[in-house]
Image 1 (cartoon, each protein chain N blue to C red):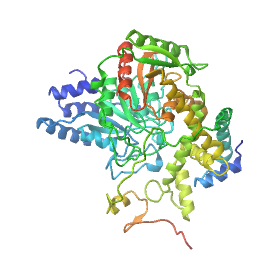
Image 2: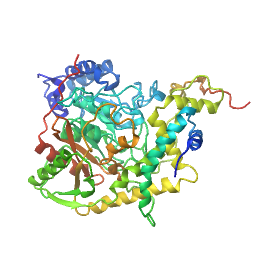
Image 3: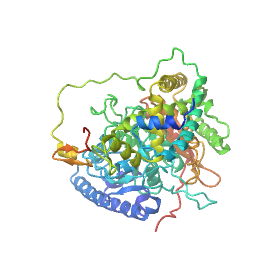
Image 4: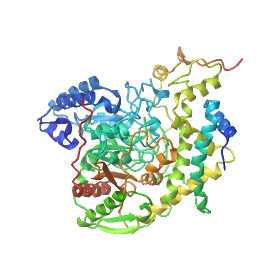
Length: 95
Length: 493
């Protein structure tokens, strides 16, 4: 499998990452280098092998369905690059 | 006391308890050492004033007779742990001005035990790297230099600021995080101890996430005893991390006693790789001999899927990273690109300008392997490989209690030597990454020097949640190696 310039443009769009036009070609080459190396996994027969879901044997924990924290609007907004009156401010979304 | 900063964590604790030194004196010595070591670039944020205030508070508690396990002991914190009110950057432009309104569980545990924070150490951006060269705040220089060259060497990565700080006596001990080797590899190439605990032993709450099924916090220290002390405090059961394991935390330092008579040490033959320097191989053999001389039994074991671990990792880790890093979009916190005309452009530009090259590369790999049509061929396959790698370890541990391997394929390399080819850099983690994929604990112990005077480490791998045995075996290596070397202080201005 080989990654070309258009594929990089498509996955960059999916990842919401602005990759300049001049970087698409070099990035495709870099990714191909990595994917070619990863191809060695094709040697391994994984028929009947379960995919890993948890790395240590552990029962998923449950917690009580109750509020444990809240009323932290100031703290939540403290690092916002655009914030006013307890709202996050972004460019216009709907025309 | 001649040089306070050269003390081990255990020695400093004992001196503080005996009241031969105060936390203030000790902390002031480190604050000065950090200022003098700025050419190393080990710290992103120095917190000298706050450290002295914390030291004074500790001295008050000591005077009052109420002492925590790490009372008054100055530590450095990898800048991936959120610290309330102190900038936490993950060495990324995208978090360059982030001041967390909350504290990570691991650091809170340290402060609750009375420890003092000296500052936040440099790292590879979002912990993605093996040389600390991907940091948006510049590379860290290894305190060690080869005897035949003045070239600046890398301190390993991603916890390169922490490894440099411990090796240069800029702190008593430091925290690190390890996703593919990021504690053990930097510890090895700086001649110090680095412990990655079992997945689930330390809470991940408040640690900037890279790959959530692999990330684990651990200590970087001067001695194995110090690592035992640090782990005892860092580890806890945390309701805020659903993968934190409900197991009591043992007193690891007490469990160091008892020796290793009868311990079965496995030597995995697949870790003997072509092209590895002869010095690495020789050190590995020496390590096995050291353990044998102290009563351990050496057994050969096989981990047949070892060579697939790194490519598996480079699917799983970027996949998780691409998902975890989706949150950095210029809206709720972090860097926002100026001049975006709509919301999509705001996301794309903020991320494109805020993330560095290696992080972007991994986000793209992760997005690709998770995208429609490729998921089964890459991600699902990698998760199956991961099961096989874990099974290898389970089978090996039927005939042994710990495994002994080299930590790295070589000593510290020159800054810039491996940045051209990503795969060459990834190979740094060839001996460490298997442990993360299987969730096991691993420790690197300094074991010797190359012919040109650079440190090399040996790695021990333990059974899940058996850090006590791991630390005991590590201490046996430490005792036999008797590694007392320190770098010359060329950086002191």
